[in-house]
Amino acid sequence: MSKNTESVSRKYRKRGKLGEIWHHFKKNKGAMAGLIILIVMFAVALTIDFWLDQEKVIGQNIREKLQSPNAAHWFGTDEMGRDMFWRVVYGSRYSLAIGFVAVIVSLIVGVPLGAAAGYYGGKIEGLIMRVTDIFSAIPSILMGVVIVSILGGSTINLMIAVGISSVPNFVRITRAAVLTVKNEEYVEAARALGKTDMYIIFRHILPNCLSPIIVQTTLRVASAIVSASSLSFLGLGIKPPSPEWGALLTAGKTYIRGYSYLCLFPGLAIMITVLAFNMVGDGLRDAMDPKLKR
Amino acid sequence: MHRYIIKRILMLIPVIVGVSLLVFVMMDMAPGTVVDIIGGEMSTEELAELNHQLGYDRSVFYRYFLYMKDLLHGDLGTSFIYKMDVWDLYMQRLPATLELAGASVLLAILLSIPLGIKAATGHGGLTDNVSMVAALLGLSMPNFWLGMMLIVLFSNRLGWLPSYGATDGIKSLILPALTIGTGLMATLTRTTRSSMLDVLRADYLRTARSKGVPEKKVVSKHALKNALIPIITIIGTQLGNAVGGAVVTENVFAWPGVGRLIIDAINQRDTTTVTGCIIMTTVMICVIMMVVDIIYAFVDPRLRAQYASGKTRKRAPKVRGGEAA
Image 1: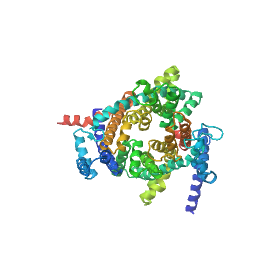
Image 2: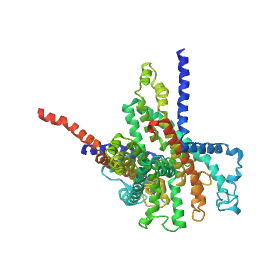
Image 3: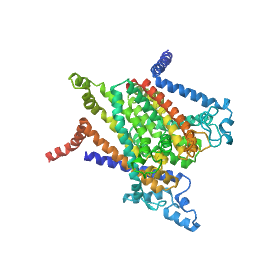
Image 4: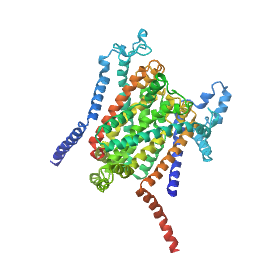
């Protein structure tokens, strides 16, 4: 019977907490605007292959090259006569995928390390944190450059490079969060019941550390998108003519004197995406932890 | 305080050892070596000779060991691409990076702190909302893109400012400093505002107001002084990041700083230069953070007392021991 009531009460409590967060989140206009932008972008990025003719993105038409923005080509055309609007729209696939996969990479590596450091303490903590210090002594963009040089410049490698270079952040944040809950009574109770460390970490500690990790994840997706496009811009990572936003900027750089719109729109696209993630991240932080609010 | 500074410097040693090992191993994993870059027209014997001379016929740890031996004598090694001492190379590029870092951080301090204070005191008002939206926009802009757009506007269209290089004095500094400064300003304005908001609610401010202290003085003297710690921390971090070289911005403006040197060195597999520059950057950041900690003590008497008490507590047993003897 007790098992039954436990599961029922947990269900209600969980729904209550999510409802609470949503209640606070939806009152924040900026965060809601960001959320709507992201939903639209995801819908477009996930379905674009079904409704857009590939020819519109890669099809060249030299006779229409380098046209300024007009009614037929909203964002103008590039040096090969390709329509910039559809290239920028199609580029959302790359940037969103890179942002998410990169952050998943850093979550997979960083969270267990941070949790182990915070939970075990002592020598394990010392070792993990010193290695983290060493990794973060190298600026993340340079770390990205070196990792891309090692792995070679492809989309997957770019994701790994950007992901690895933001691992230290997740280690630190997770460790700090674990430290705040590891001496709680429910952890002690679980230990007294003879549960394994693994079970305690994943079942009791991490679920109670989720807020800072989720907020950090949202904000990191934003910075991963910027890092990835910076690496593409430096000539590493994704190369033109792929319509990734950083690669579009690299391609447009050659024509920037006469045809600055080639660089204007991909950059605006990056900015709006990053802005949306930042607004949602800020909103989540305020909603999840009223203590942190302003 | 002395003890504290010495401790900070000693803590730097394992980081330097670790960072240089990490750079050596990672550069070794990257395909190609510096010999492949400079040895294009050499004969097989010459290549073998050069490989032997640079230690590329041995393991990466052997080369690392040789490097550390030199480093112990204060020698950062010689770059085989630039044919000069890495220390001299770094010192040649450092002024440009410092100039840019200083200008952009100064720009951020001058604009953000007043703006953040204004936003916090008029919480929920027009200035607050506008500056927070602007800060969020500034935070979301990719640096290199902002740089490109500034070049389009101020160099290509208006022709007011040069678009690249550092040869035109203050004129060539404006655009790169603005590019880096925008991101810094955004972060600093947000920090100032939230730190001020925390303090403005404090009881001692109500006390000050009820004593009849004019509002201007309440904000500038009582509130700001207590809100300064997080603001100083952020400024220190930003200065530290900027001193490492703004890799992408330096690339956009062809700015002759450390960031571009490191990128070029990575691409040419010039491990000595990469390691040397990253070690120097780590040292610089450590020094900046130390200065920040010392500034804390000046700003906050509580922290000053903490430093001082730490000192006396460590001394105390010695004194007592002396008495007993």
